[in-house]
Image 1: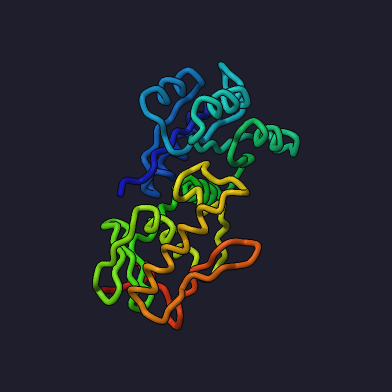
Image 2: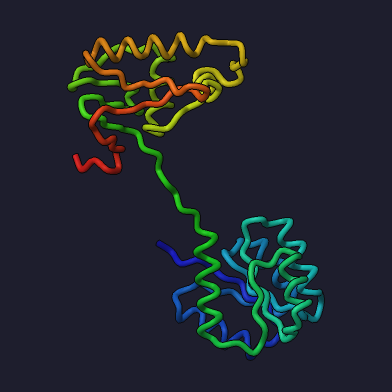
Length: 242
C-alpha cells in the first residue's frame, strides 16, 4: 500500500528542506511550496492527504488559505505550522477548518506523531456487513437470498425474507413495526396499519412448519417483534471459519 502524500507550504526554504528530508525518511511522499501560488499549483496537480501550512506566507495569509481550502477540499487534512503560538491564533485556525495546530519551534517527533494521528483519522475503516447468519438449524444467506433449515431451502416470499433479515440483524432485541414496515416498503407505515402483523404471522408459520415446535419470533408488547433463537448462538459470516 502506497504511503499518503504530503504538501509542505512554508516560505522558510531551509526549514522546508529539513522537513522534507525528515518526512521522506518516514516513508511519505512530500512536495514543498514556498508560497501560496506554488501551493495552489500543487493542489491542482494532485490532492495530498495532508497539507502542512504555515500561517505567515509572503503572498497570502495561511488563515485565509485554510478557510478556502477547507471549503474546496473537505477531505483534505490541514496541519497548521506557525511561530505564533498565541491561544487565540490556535483557536482561530481550528475554527477556520484546520485539523491540528503546531507552534514553532516544535519537536520533530511530535510533528511526525501528529501527522500519523491525522492520517489515521482520515483513513476510513471499512466494515463489511455480514452476509450469512447461522442460528442452529436455521441459516440465512443474504447474497443468495436463501433461508435453509437443516441445509434444506425453505420457500419464503420476498416480503417474508426481508422481514426475517431485519429481525435477525439484532437477535433478542425488539424491532418496531415501523422499522419492519420500512424494511418491506419504505414509507408504508401508518400507526393504524396492522399489515405488518399479518406478514410477521405468516413468517412465523413458515418457520414453525420448517422447524416444528419452535417459535423464534416473539411479540414485544408496545414495541414490535424480536427474533429470539432458542438455545443457539447466532454467527455471522465473519465468525464462521467454515
